[in-house]
Image (cartoon, rainbow, N blue to C red; front, side, top):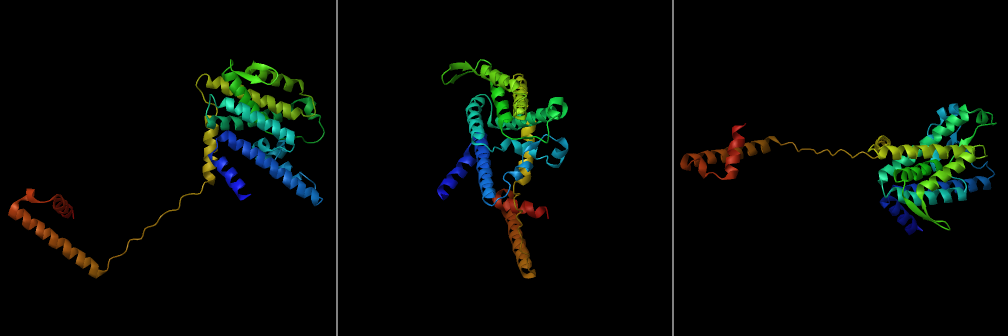
Length: 292
């Protein structure tokens, strides 16, 4: 068992950002399931703690839980939900990294999640249909972040083809448009919040691709922000203090006597044979003595 955890830890550290995102999402899912099982066994209301990790539709509640803008995009409670999300993240993440870097994938993942969160919050607080819903609504899942990656790759290279089972070769952009159409058709379903977030992530991916086509990297500011946050939690290097031993009066007098004797010997040599007869070390000693 220890070897398994050691191997997983090594793969996480040496893997690219795509591998790390899959590890984080899967690890959080397993942890949530284990906590829920323990809470059920002890007759405690399961998943009540998730309210502090899910993104609320109530903006006033969000003011007290601003971290949920990030945590929600790593939370899954249903096995099929995380299975399909991680498969999409792996497949289309690999395609995305044919054109872009690991850092750009990481930055777009976060931007896509934030774009989905923004459209979700606006819709549930401005559109009359959603404002009429009873009670607060919460959003979870990496779908919006993944949609940004899918649409980022599809709209950057609109001629890119993929091979689908039972269908054959198909342009990625057609698949992207199809998923967007499905989300639009399901805007009034029970999972309306999820489909709205998908659209927000897709729009962020399209924006990213359009900026990259003119040489502008939309993820650069986000990656700089992430770097600053990570650096806050990095252990700072310890200061090394070197203590210099203080000379005693005897040691000082002995050193000065030797220096004066060596200097007198060098000056006598200059008188006898001239300056050119001195060695490089003797010349350096004479120069150092002239500065004192």
